[in-house]
Length: 291
Image (tube, rainbow, N blue to C red):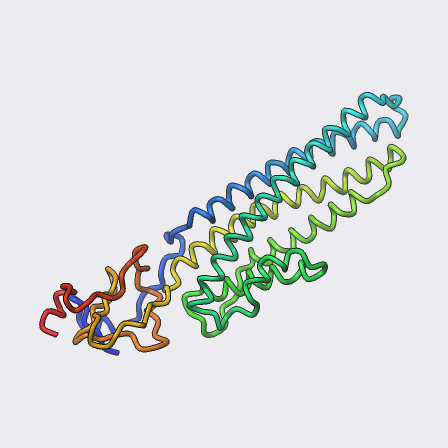
């Protein structure tokens, strides 16, 4: 398809277009909500690490005979750890709801434009986190699919960024360590030391995973904002004119997008709520005045 761009020669139109700048792309409000939640999770994990290591240090001194066991002191430390863990879990639960909502909505939008690149239905965005064993694989697969589907080109098969793989590896490791530390026996002071140190290690890794998750969420949100949105192609022939958004080439002679057509990824995204079709009675672009 040849299109005329005012002030630009056809040789310029046919020239390779620069890749869109992902770093300058828009990050949606829901994605920023996920970022806030992840920062809160990281802060809660730091608090939990401090509480666990504080109890581990006290239990270590008791186990080495440096001091006798003070039941009141141990009860206070237990309460501190329980409060930190409970608060951390509550913040994680809220953040998980926001994260899943953001991921679900993004995949629903991608389904309409690049659904052939998504291997699983959007329902797995929710259930993939709750099915045992599957929850170690399926959420990551769907993030991989979203990353590939938001690439500026879908051929050859786009590669998933390393930060996505590292984030998921850290997340899984943190969950394993936390589960091990929580389920170890605590009958003796030395048992408390071992369990708390393992749990603290898992929480430190959780902080790192949260930081990388922020990079993944922001990166995916920016990439998805550059994916051309599917256009409504149901206009009645001869009754409507295609209305290109600002920055798009202006077609000649009442051209309409054929079924399956997608705009060039390097073109700027259409403004929110842009009306792609105008009745012929309404005045369209100047280039159509004689069509």
